[in-house]
Image 1: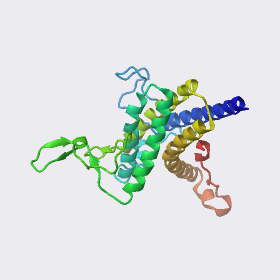
Image 2 (image 1 turned 90 degrees about the vertical axis):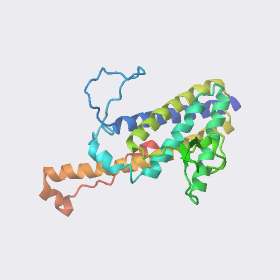
Image 3 (image 1 turned 135 degrees about the vertical axis):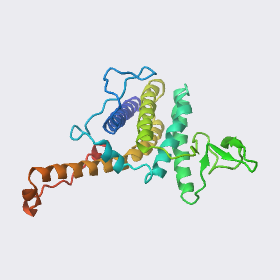
Image 4 (image 1 turned 45 degrees about the horizontal axis):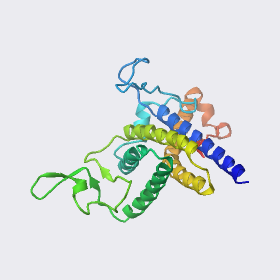
Length: 257
């Protein structure tokens, strides 16, 4: 029975991981901004292919101005820093070679993130990359005792001393999260899938799913608005009639559950 249960848990986890990888890749492709150059064969310096823009659920290719309007970096300053903070914290964890330790570290990171967000709700002090001492010299924040909320093992609460671009940060966050899930899938080959392991991975996934749920709802709203505008252009008089108004109360975020 234990072997059967382990197989069921492993299958469920792999399905969940694959679904999340597809989700993050799709969001990254859908929200990518056009490049200044036009070359499908162009490759980045690291040898990776430049991301190709895709229509959101094959329904709408987002206009860059609409994306920047919906995801305004100034309005979303706090959320941008949260994505940056969690994404940068994943880097050192990805270097952990032992599968069991890797999964354990991800679980600790998620717990530390939840603790930080709860704590930062009542405190507004930020931890920056650099700050000036009384003498005017710059020192690394890590060398300044007590200059942070909490004392964490994996969560890096550094934030840069300048505003970040939300779309750029989210693009990188999606990229590193795909790498995280891919390594998580590889780790399943070397560990025994028990109820505890299943619960730990489900908890990790729950946090990252919540991180994108807000974004998908905002994208759904953007799609609704664009469809409404297109329908009004086709027949503004007919669309304005209450009995002929098309119901746009739909959302794609249910796909990400």
